[in-house]
Image (cartoon, rainbow, N blue to C red; front, top):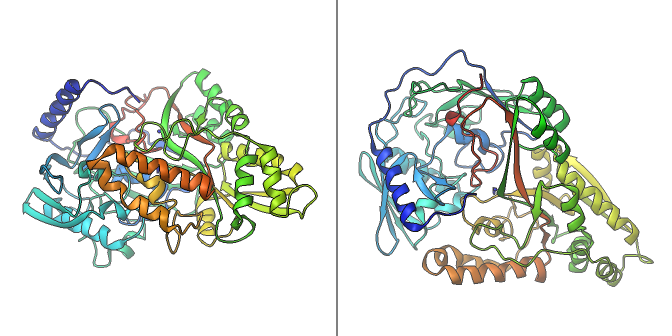
Amino acid sequence: MRRRVSAAPASVLVSILAAVLLAACSPPTEVRQAPVGESPFVYVKNTDIITEWDPARSYSNEIIAFQNVYETLTLWNPVTKKSAPRLATGWRSTADGRSWTFTLRSGVTFHTGNPLDAEAVKASIERTMRARTGASYIWDAVSSIRVEGPLTVTFALKYPVPLDLVVSAGYAAYIYDTKAAPDLGKWLAQGRDAGSGPYTVAKWNKGKEDELTLKAYDGYWGGWNERPHYNTVRYRVVPDPERAYRMLQRGEASFTDRLDPKLFAQAGAAPGIRTSDRPSFTTAMMLFNTATGPMKDIRVRKAVQYAIDYRGIVKALKGSVTPASGVIPEGLLGHVPGRVPEQDLESATRLLQEAGYGPGGAPLRLRLTYGEGEADEEVLAKRLRAALRPLNVTLKVEGMHWNAQWERGKKRGQDIFVMYWWPDYADGYSYFGQVFRAANPPEFNLTYLNDHRLDAMLDTVPELTVTDKPAAQRVYEQATARVLDERAAAALPWVVKSRRAFLGGIQGYDDNPAYPDVVFVYDLKPSG
């Protein structure tokens, strides 16, 4: 939810941004009908695609499709590390950062045919704010939204936040047509969309391998006539990485977002296949059940932290990951260097014995769940099981489809929940605010922490991020110590490297760590 190029000098960034803004303000390309006849772009993923159809509530894997169907006001640029135009062509803020005005692109329509104007922006964001679920917290600073003209909208804030960055978020920042249906939520849940992006939903086969198909939207504001484009995008669910790779070799797949180290090495040497290997903002998280079961005892949680063979696991994953340091990955405010954990079986044994378990004590049984098809998570689970066995701890490991694992997690149905996390936008807050802040019922707080001291710390971060970055960094460091040391609520073994494999003829692919696993298909030139 949460993966580049070094920052250029400030003068260069200003020139780049100015050029981007001028280009964005130029007249839109004349729109013609969407392309026909090209082979589809086939994206193979190991987990379910859709968990939620409503863009106000979406907060999971569907980001890979939704970023091709829906659009946001801005888009985070990983080169400049700034927001770039998308539906908004320009924006300005007052000196105190409490008022932001955005100018919208003209001539944009939703897939419903209705115009995307300032009223539509206001209506969609206010509906998302009312939902109070998923990532809707990104709008907490907004006190009101005013329509200043057909293509001008102003946000009044209760406290300053970098709103140009907030509106680029991968979740909860989508602009959509609230007038698409009287009961929009029910209408969307049938596999429909109300977006403005280059693609619209053609078919949804819930629970099937060939789960989702998108087709090009004829009226897309970007146009279709300057170069070849894909007219169809298909998302297929294939948990077996070996089979996914064979599909890529045979040309049945265009792209796969993750292969194990062995397959990735094969892909790098295979004719007709290209690979991409980039740092990411995606962190592996082991979330410990602090509310029920044996891990309610902090001594057991600390023992599990110590039992993890961090170095051995990173080595076993052969370059596909890097060691995690703290909670927030390098490249974002809140990263804490020098906190790479180490295995300490002696301390693990001592803590377990203090809790009445361990060698010579009562046998301890723990349950760990991870995502089916996640080969690296499986390595983690098996190595932890092997490390705990001599300590008189039996670890039951279960790979599950993501939707089923998540539902069980919400019901506190495991001791250790393994998942990946990436930022809601290019900022460190969501690693804490969404994962470790008190939430009832839990959504992604799958440690079930209810820590008022931690929550009070986190409440100060959004404003400090704008007004006093050094102070925000200090709070993040305190929150890191609170979660990992004082509460021992989690362990973070690695940060993922984005290792992709795709057909060699595809041109225009680039990886944006703020939108993990997303392929912006409109930007690609199809393979021959």
